[in-house]
Image 1 (cartoon, rainbow, N blue to C red):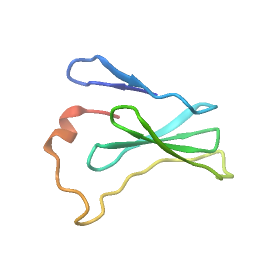
Image 2 (cartoon, helix red, strand yellow):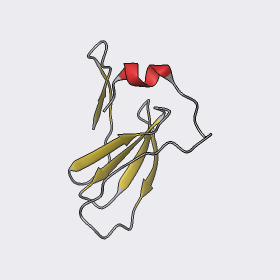
Image 3 (cartoon, rainbow, N blue to C red):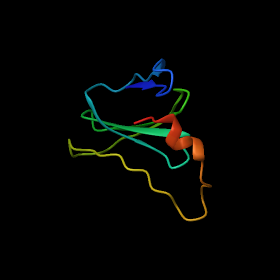
Image 4 (cartoon, helix red, strand yellow):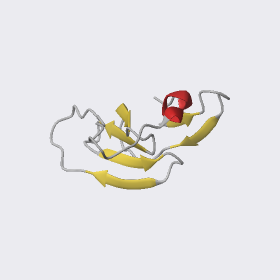
Length: 87
């Protein structure tokens, strides 16, 4: 997975560690964390700077999809989140 700056079009970092193809990614509502789902049956969690924060394993399906939801009162609106344009 490669994270790009949508304004400058420069690569910010490359996330490595999955042992198979990544097919699902999702940003947290505050744009601070990224989840990546892979055919290696894991979901990896990353900081926006590319630091690996943890791995969620034990999935038995080969079809993992990442989704991050805003929890009421948990995150404040971040107007820069949409401007960064990560996806």
